[in-house]
Image 1 (cartoon, helix red, strand yellow):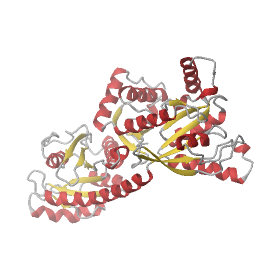
Image 2 (image 1 turned 120 degrees about the vertical axis):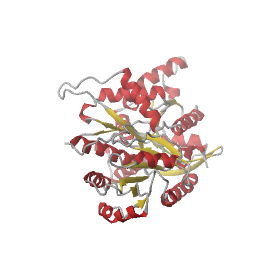
Image 3 (image 1 turned 90 degrees about the horizontal axis):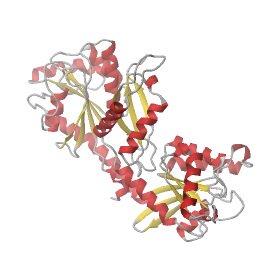
Length: 466
């Protein structure tokens, strides 16, 4: 397996355990983890945080999440807490274990959780009837069938009864998971890293590809807009395989003078969406234009990894010393493309084939940085430390302070070769999250963790929904 696709293609499936208080979630968690991690007491609401562990009993091994924080009484606060737990499970898990208490029978809280979980139609949900110490409790299965998840699997976490059956069920789900990964692996190895060259007309995209290929594969002309379509060009560099996507230069909508240009622009926008990495080619000699900023904004909105290619560096203040020219280029690009602050830049001359190797060094840095994704536990500790260091101020109108209950990571494209993390923040009220504080959290993450070239989009979700 190539290293660049390893972080996602080697991802373990995740299993979330949800349910109302005191049904034995933590006991099931400990049994699957084969060690005592979660606190187990005969008192509802003991688990207040999400606990993570590895389960080596399944094939392949999986990551377990024991959800916590659900209140004791089925009141309004309980309902909002259940909402948080269910959403965390639906956002992070590949399989959800919905645990109920066979001894107590069907409860209103079970129905509340089931109603929320039914929205996760794309996730397998297994109903687990816990505390079935003997077969007589299995007769309760019919009552729980009305939840809509079948008759369920009767188990006893305390005695280990029927856990082999539960493990077989998980293995069946994981077979599908592994099959999907195998398909993606085959496609990824065949296509390689998809790198889109994006920019306004005459910025030098085709010249750059010709310089990379050392072959005039694309038409280069002083007439802007020579490239009319997005062209996929297979390219091998050493042992690495890439697909270079040469695109038509984007011009403002009002200046597109033919239907051909309109369709070319549509293909360019599609190329951004399907690329693993976008190279934004800017004519440094002409300077960053309004169109460059619009294209950069589109890359940001698509949430794509990006490297800024400052082309025609040989024409940029040619009489000045190189360090001074580099500093001027850096200040210009950072001022004009400030919203792509996460994107590194490389100064090149496509016409003279200067610094082309530096582009692929930057590509490797972006890809390697994406491999080292933060675990959920590390991410939550980082965010909590950031809050301690700089607590949110009270909202002037709502008169409350922001509380971040839990943070988890999702991906825009789950099997992308350069995975882009989306941070899902579960908070007390998303109206309390200001842009400044969100920017502060992002900066703290970047200070502690290398995210070169990667955007970090946030999705803030309220616990209390009115």
